[in-house]
Length: 293
Image (cartoon, rainbow, N blue to C red; front, side, top):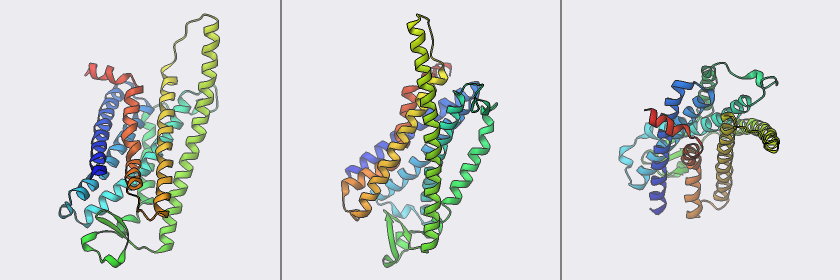
C-alpha cells in the first residue's frame, strides 16, 4: 500500500510536469519552429502516455477495481505502455542527434545536415510510431484478464492482466527485435553525445581564451540547449540501465523482494517523471512563454 501511494503520487506529479512542458513548448514552437522543440513536445506526449497507462493499471490493482476493466482494456493499456517505452528511447536518441547537428559548424560534414524546417522531423516520428507498434504487435495476442484465465495457464502476472504462454520462437523473435532496437538507438545516442561533448569542450576552450584576452562573450543558446539534451540523455540511460539490473535481480530472486519490486516499478516510469522537471529547471523560456500568454 505504501509503495502504491508513492507510485500514484509520483505518477500524478509526472503527468502534471509533462503537460506543463507540452503546453509551454507548443507555445514556443508556434513562434520559433525549432526541430528540438518539436521533439521535446513529442517526448512530453510520449511520457504522458507512459504515466497515464501505468497510473491506470496501478490504481486498478491498488483499489481492486478489476470489474472496471475487461480483456480489451488490458490489451490496450499494456500495448500502449510498451509502444510508449520504445518511443521514449527513439525520441531521446533522435533529439540527441538533432542537437548535435544543430551545434555543428556550418562548414562541417554534419553541419550540412541541418534541417531547413522542423516539419522535416515528422516522417521520422511517424516511422518511430510504426516501428514500435510492430515490435510490440505480439502483446495483444497473449494478454488476458485474470478473471478470464485458467490459473494453470498463467506464466507472468501484471497485477490483474496476465501473459499466456506463447510460442517460444515468436517470443524470441520479438525479444531480439526489442534488444536490437534498444542497442541501435543507444549506440546512436552514444555517438551523438560524444560528438556534442567534443564540441562543448572546444567551445569551453574558446571561452577561456576570450576570457584571458579580456573579451566579452555570451554563450549561444544552442550550446546551453546541448547541455540540457545531454542531461536528458544521461537521465534516460540511468533509469534504463538501473531498471535492467533490477529486472535481472528480480528474475533470479523469483520476485520475492518487495522493496526491489517497488523500486523496479518506480524505475520503469522514473525517466517520464524526472525529465520534464529537468527541462523546467534548465530552460528559462518557460517563464517567458507564461508571461507572454
